[in-house]
Image (cartoon, rainbow, N blue to C red):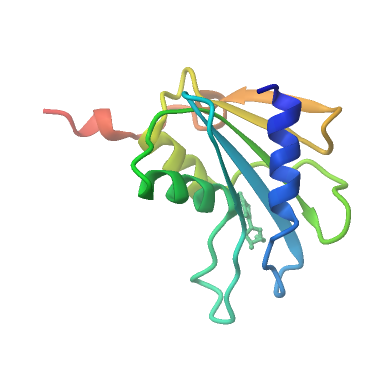
Length: 137
Ligand code: THU
């Protein structure tokens, strides 16, 4: 699966965004090492704090099905309507990535459209991150 194809999966997932409060629609597509894609969108709530980001929706769908081996994630987000800007993952989502992914290897594909993608490692977006290995005795 190319980065472009994965990003297009994220754009499709963004269509399901439930964001009546922020009106900011986000989609994510998480690629597993065996080639499966788990998608997610942001899901907001009238009580605000239960809101979950698109990235964590995708991760938690996969992990809840027993999958923990991830290669990359594509993310797209912008105000409702067509995609017009690049969105970067929030700090909480970066920390969730840190739980399951090797920061040197896991890739984050961002862009304002499928033709203008930028790729970062998790380490680039979360330098000196705290993860499971820090708790090893
Ligand atoms: N959002 C995401 O889905 N992912 C991010 O990484 C940043 C923020 C969502 C949460 C909320 O529904 C909306 O975007 C505005 O913050």
